[in-house]
Amino acid sequence: MPQFLDVGSGDDSRRIAVLAREGAGSAVVWLGGFRSDMRATKAEALDEWAAECGRAFVRFDYSGHGESSGRFEEGTISRWLEDALAVLDRFVLGRPVLVGSSMGGWLALLATRALRQSDSDRSPAGLVLIAPAVDFTERLMWDAFPEAVRDAIRREGVHHQPSAYSSEPTPITRALIEDGRRHRLFGAPIATGCPVHILQGMLDPDVPWRHALELTEHLPGENTALTLVKDGDHRLSRPQDIQRLIDAVEGIA
Image 1 (cartoon, helix red, strand yellow):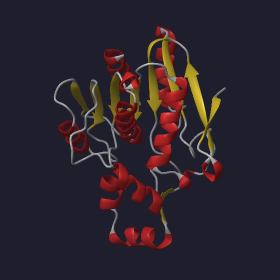
Image 2 (tube, one colour; image 1 turned 90 degrees about the horizontal axis):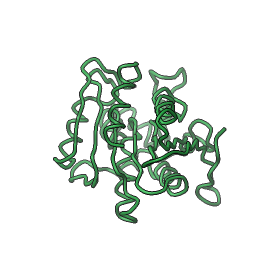
Image 3 (cartoon, helix red, strand yellow; image 1 turned 45 degrees about the vertical axis):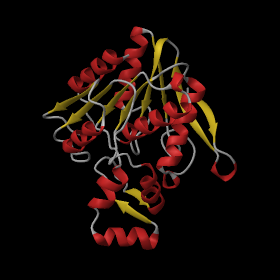
Image 4 (cartoon, helix red, strand yellow; image 1 turned 90 degrees about the vertical axis):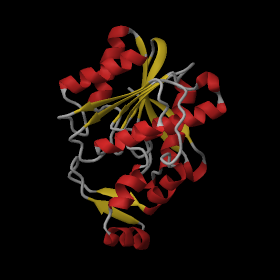
C-alpha cells in the first residue's frame, strides 16, 4: 500500500501516492511518463530488482496520475516537478539515482538542476533516461500541431489528442504548453554533475531518436552514454529492454 505525501497548499494542495522500499546504497527513484503511473511495467521490474539486491527504491504518481489526487487536466511541468522534488525531499537521503521515462526524463533533468542549485550534497549521483522527452510540450507537441489544433488550444484552452496508449484522448491544455516554455532546456549546455545513460528506441513514434541525439549534444562529454535500440519502440518494455534498463541502472548505482 502506498504512503501519501501532502504537497502544495490551499486550492493547489494534493496527495501524492508513494511506494518506498528501504535498502542500502543510493536510492533509485523512478520518474514516470506523461499519463503513466508508478505500477507500470518498467517501474515494477526495477522494484523487483531492488528487492533482490537490497537497494532502496522509490516510485510515486504525479498529481492527476495513478493513485495520487488531482485532475490530470490541472497538471503542468511546474506542478509535477514540485511533486517530484517533494518526494525526493521526504523519502530520499543522500544522493539518488534518478531513472526518468519519457516526460520523467525531462523532469529528472529539471530536478537535477534544482537540487544542484539548492543542495549539492543531495544532487543526483547518476541519471538513467529512457526516451527522454525533453521540452516535449514545445518541440514534440506545439511545433508538431497543425495550426487548427493550435488555434483550438488558444481559443478553448484544451485540445483532446487521440492516444495510442488509451481509448480516451489526452487533454493537452494551454496551461501545460505555456508552463512548459518556462522549463525548456535545449539551447544551452545542460550540466548534471553526474553520469548520464540514455536508452532510446529507434522505432519510437513519440520521441524520435534524433531528439535523444540532440539531448546528448547538450550534455557534458564525459560520463554521458547513449544506447540506441534499433528495433525499440517508445515503451522499451520487452524483456530484453528491461534487462538493458537494469544493466544501465546497475552500472550507475
